[in-house]
Length: 238
Image (cartoon, one colour):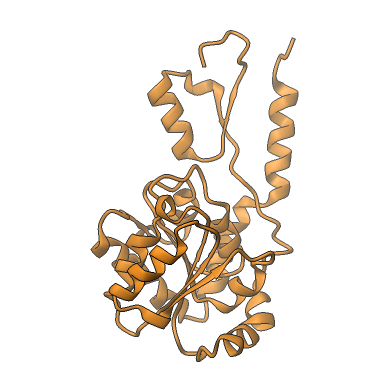
């Protein structure tokens, strides 16, 4: 950051921008916030109608059963254990669907068994196509210890799912647009459980999907591209 050749820094979230300014004493005017984008055509509100019934039938999950979706590899950093602890305290016996890879996946499954989740914790492994899972779940959650952004949050919200994130997740800026109560302290099981309960409550309301989608539309992939191009064109790179 001290190099005279460095013209600007691109930060994919406000959280990252603030970290760079604070920890590296870098000039704020040279830090440019260009958040990740999402393909709003691919991730859409039709996924529920297209996939919910089929995916739930495949897994033998009733339509009324609440489903919490976790997407991410590296389960410890992404906060899977706090999530499992929080879900274990909730009423209604929600299921937790885990998509992603971790060499210690079996250990997390065993931890889920000790917490009483049992068959409600489904370790689904990596999936080439996440669209059906967004369509079949009720809410998404990314309670990371630290995550510069968390693109899965935009994908989920563009698909109409309320998302719960940690205060250490850069995508909190997007979640905050929809419902600040869904930004939680992942180190507190009670706080995370309250966020999950609130998200599940909201997911049952017919108007929620459109409101969540509206928040995600601020992160259109094409807007991200235009911002990047404008930034490069405005820099003196000589």
